[in-house]
Image (cartoon, rainbow, N blue to C red):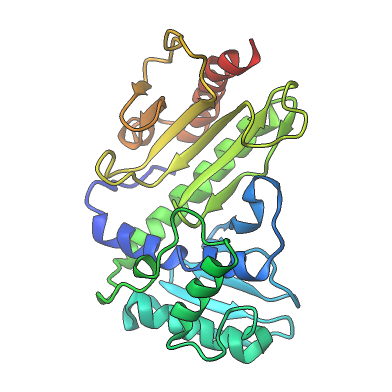
Length: 289
């Protein structure tokens, strides 16, 4: 399978990010904290992404190919919303309403709230669960959501292909690792690897992250493969990287392989698998020594 051109996908990528970012606050409110914040993450499916299993057994599905967000409860009840019939605010209201009707109103801060999104954000702030990225404005944008289903569906194929390639890469490592998952706040697919010195597998300690990001505002409008180490030594020379990668230093330090390089490969999954392994070897040397 050849990879599509994603150089003109900003409108669609912005919509997809707006939709996916609604899942994180719900996870924060309904799920117990897990090490490395894994309770916030989403799983990858051929058609898109799926939430963690919510209390009682329900799940939130984001179907990138169909342009829909859906909540399916434990007994098969299904509510589906078309992205393009909503703004981010109205989509969040609709999703929180069906969750409230399914018995999660108190946990979501619905009681007495001026609006369901406001009630949830206020509750998370009061409980010190909001984190650095969650604001009411960030989950209640008023512009009509727009999506090119051809582009969104193509990106679903890209993410699943990257998931396949990075799963193969991950299977070649030894040691402690997190699952390969998507973060709603940043929309990126990643895994963390921990050296022996970080036996607790805590992201506040030494680790290497390898992943695939759809974009970074102000830096990369298109997707890219990345890897970084944490923490870097106080003084170090950037490690040798494969010719396809560049060393990024603006705002964060790490290796980046642009999507356009990946898309040109005859076997892009093997290329990602092998390149991720090269990047990992370069980064792991910075946290193991």
